[in-house]
Image (cartoon, rainbow, N blue to C red; front, top):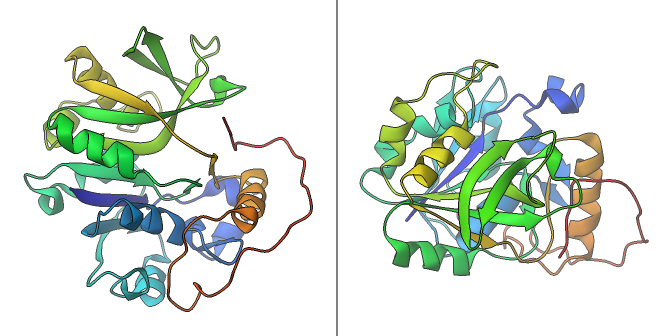
Length: 266
């Protein structure tokens, strides 16, 4: 299985911080945001990884990450996304890299407490189709929401006004190589993007979508509130850390923090 991290977004919700750098290079506790999804993939045994970057700071990823040695990797792959065209458009750029393999796709601003090894292994046994990781949340209308019937996902609705479930779709997706054929059939949405929700709904229509609940806490770090909270959660967490220059710092006791956020624990 290959791993892909999508880190090409411009991070407009974090302006003016992102006026001078890519949001995925911003600090989350004691390391750059991009370290977290890389470590999540490595912990799951995925070592052939492609990073999709974009914007004026794309070269800074290479300066920071190099060949991935800090994560125990022998090499790290990079590609560049021109502008913004949606998650599915970014994923389309890595077709040559994935080849005939399956792929785990992570959004670069997602920070997870627990590893995804179990989900990755389950998808390898599945062999075909797709798998998404879900998290029960208090206000699902801010996310893509999975509509469930029994143990099946029957639809995914993007930020619905009246959610049919409390299960948000997290930024971790598993696909077979058919995902690229599906993307080629898509038309841009009303906001001019190729939507990953449309990709997922094709798999659902084919009866090839499975799902699994994500363990531990999960947050994105794409807003000021969630960026701050992600740092506090990471500081108190025993999550695995890279062994490079940023990996020697140990989690410390932090004061209790109370805020409305996009982090969810069940």
